[in-house]
Length: 447
Image (cartoon, rainbow, N blue to C red):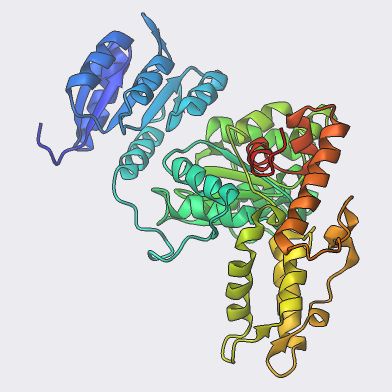
């Protein structure tokens, strides 16, 4: 085997299917190894260099999931795609949660197989981001945002569907774009769709496209979002706003990796990586019957929670400086008075980054003599930390950090009391991740 030729390991106990896969991959100019069970696959992985593994889910001595787990345990940098029986995508979703790259459903489509193999092998190539090597979209040194960036590094190397949760204005689309830009699909389209902005009557044609003459006014063929994102990433923002009828059609498209245009007789295969986001609690919507549980599990193979701006206070000066540079482009950078900076640091930001941008853009416009005072910020009382219990400033020269810690401690204490000490529930009440709450409890010395 030449070191420049990629090698694919096929793990399947059906000789006919193994032969079909081997012939297809050999025609693509790839080296091929074959195993009929889990044990043989692990032995080959231990002694041979492999760049991709294709494994059936059901094997004589176990499951394909065990091959995925072996690769994870041995810390082998090899993408794995699982082959699952028709209608058994639950197993494939479980494998992707365990670390599989993607899945193929039987009966196999050779076109889908070739697309998957090309995409998987591209993951092993050094990826130049679409940002041209510039700084990441998500900045800051706070523990919460560092955790997000580390998770994105992992998510970029898989094809698993990712659901991004978080309050409005926390940068969910920026996270989705960074996942795309760090992935092997970075050179392909990124199509962002606001599901809440599409009239229900137009949803099917917007998502799946239509043929000429499909309805009055359809004077030419038109691609839908799936066709436009073919080979790349489809980002469904505010996915909770999809009506139930459209959720059913979207579920089928995700499961079959095929769509049918309005007015077309045949389905067409589409190769897209699905990312979704919403500021709503999808679990709650599922319980209320407003969001399909099966679609939720397809979209939320891996979850990514975006921290609110109030969890990133240490990074606020950096964010403020960068935004002031953006809004004052072409003119002198305005200076913040100390009172204005302290007001920004103490503000609660119910609208998160979007609100911070709005505040600073307005302040730059209102500033006189190149100086921004507290009045130019026009901060509303609804976002003030003083709205929280124990937030009134105390006499005696209390520092800003002491003040913020006291406010944070009071809010956490109130949430823990409301949840009878259940930290998971308290984190949900506070709108933060459990990891973030645990970090804050440790930092504040709250045992």
